[in-house]
Amino acid sequence: MTRIVVSLITLLFCLELAAYELVIIQGISNTGQTFVTRKGKKDGIARGMEATFTSNDVSIIAKAISVTREFTQWEINNNYTEIPFRKGEIVTFYDTKEYLWALTPEAVKQKYVKAELYSPRISLAFHTSLLRGVSESTSGSESSPAQRGGIIFEGIVEKELARNYALAGGIRYAQEVINVDAASLVSTRFLTIGEARYYFDKIQKFYNARVMLGIGFGIGQVNLDTSGQTSSGQAVILPITKTALVLPVNRNADMMFEFAFENLRTDVEFEDGSEQNSNDNNIRFGIGYKRYFK
Image (cartoon, rainbow, N blue to C red; front, side, top):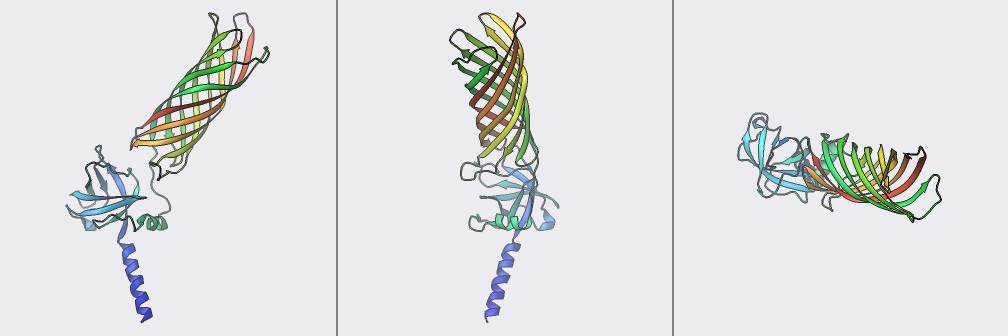
């Protein structure tokens, strides 16, 4: 008798697991209300059928509005919610009208799928931040207290290499005011920036935010204006160390709140032929807006 009960329980459990199927999101409409999967009439899908799709802690109900032999177009039932999936993502399909909050089908998926399909994206971001000097040393002059601060604008293109890795590069314009006892100087810099970035997994309990760590460098030109005289030279930032909190605005855009520490070296040649080398440690904090294009 005991063996029979155990066998029945095992059979029911296996049938429950078999009810879950893995499907790939083939495409998502511009409206965010419909998506396409590679399941069609040959798989028993009929127009008007409703099913549940889950990924992580998100579960939606969708209706089949267009069915061919190989593909089905699904429409989400809630007109006020966008589809929480991305093209190429593997999700769990379940032929039911109930949400699966307690059934954890993603745990089942992870047992059989070692890696989900991922489509790297390209993005363009605009950043602005405030700069604050921490310490400095200048050749040919005695150390004197200085107050340094300024503003930075950046345009950055980022290419994702994998779900957690990306390379970024762009241009920076920075203007810094340096106040010392004897004078006030304005430093203007135009630089090319390169960065390697690592994104941690989403924090699902905090708006799907991600923490980013980055390290990079910058090289370009510096113009130093003091008492109406302008001198120019080379500026190098090495390293740029950065951390940021990335909050998704929607499927195609993020907001970034970032903090960075940088070491800046400038080599300036004055009109009389003399040269001055400076090493500055700076911190900066600011915001950015990133838009994805793929």
